[in-house]
Image 1 (cartoon, rainbow over the protein chains, first blue to last red):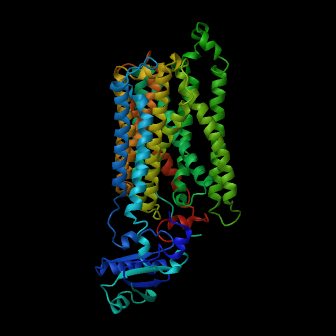
Image 2: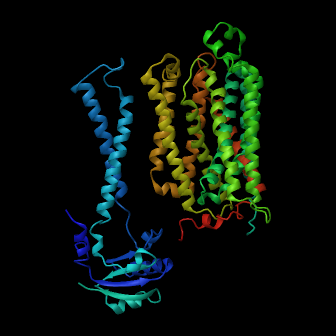
Image 3: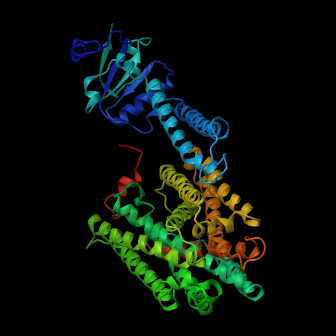
Length: 182
Length: 395
């Protein structure tokens, strides 16, 4: 098991950082403008950092639609089908019993369980998808400026661009550009 | 505080709504000549439906204040104006309660009462004077509390003596208590007592769920219409998205409550409860009930899953028209289903119900838009106004 000491020793430090440039940005408007510029320049390797979620940023970054809703829908269908069919199988063929004078196949009583398992499977699928697609546990490899966890913003651009190019692209939007090396 | 131009209801639209009111009233008059029993039931449906829409106006406004919502500030004047539908509802329900009681409620007949031991036990509650007094108390308290809420909310536009959010949410809390308790009693009185031998505790919840569904439908249609004709410029797709999410959630809520009521009735199998389903699941009513469940839940639920539709006022309004129509179908199901065994012949939704639905639309559109045109269109005096306008756009 990972101990706190391991963590402190730097087991989860950026051992394999993706190299490039980090531009420190001072406000939200500049971050959105910068993201739009980088998107329009056709750069694929870049990411934005902010201490809070920003609406519109996903559009400014040109991100495609998230897969999470579709994965949730698959989870919902799986859960619903599983609950309804397993209860039908138990009540009709595996262990038929007469309860309250109702027929073996009494669908109204299956609805609450079907509903609950649908919700449960949807929740698991959504959580799993969010962790996987959000690259939780991997994303710390991306270097960030310390202030982005409190009051700063930053944009990371991969090293297929030279520093001069980054500077001219983000003209007037950044306060500092720092290199990220191995 | 900035001054915005008041909304002008286009003359064409006013004439359109007046035309619909004409259709509704003509239907009612023709109905009373051709089939009076059905017309009385139709009038109860019309009055109850209008009552739910009017109450929704107060409900949404007070929910907005109590929860400290900021996003809904821009559209608050519309929900406040929706409250005025309650006047028309009071007129129709007043006529039904005072003149139509003998046509609708079997417990109001003394000879029925005398031969029925179950009803005799309920006579302390179900009797003519008490019934009329109760309905009067409901409406008087709703009007008193609702107009007070609106008055204080409008004071925010003034330059002096502005009420704080605390005052407004205190009034809202008062309204909410009166609204919930009296809606509960009112739906028991007006609709549940059509079948006096039957009772269930889920019933008021069901009418509340229907109220919120069709209420949000009407609110969405009205805001989209006002925006189309040059008002409510500050409303963005974000606001419609949130209204759409509410609509979506309450379509689900309606189904949840409806199914709860049905499943518990089915499971417990008590004679005084099952009569409700028994009357509504066989013959013509089987098809009608299936239509209600599919139309009020499954279709809007699947359509509203899409966020694109929720963000587009025109498309969202189209879905809302359907939900508003299904809300009326739902009230018909409740009322006609209860008295079908003696008075309602043939299919439950015929020309008379369609005419009454059009009349209801006319009354809602005319009274809300004209009440809205009289006031300052957006509450710019509200301290959260700017926050509401820029909601979700910038932080």
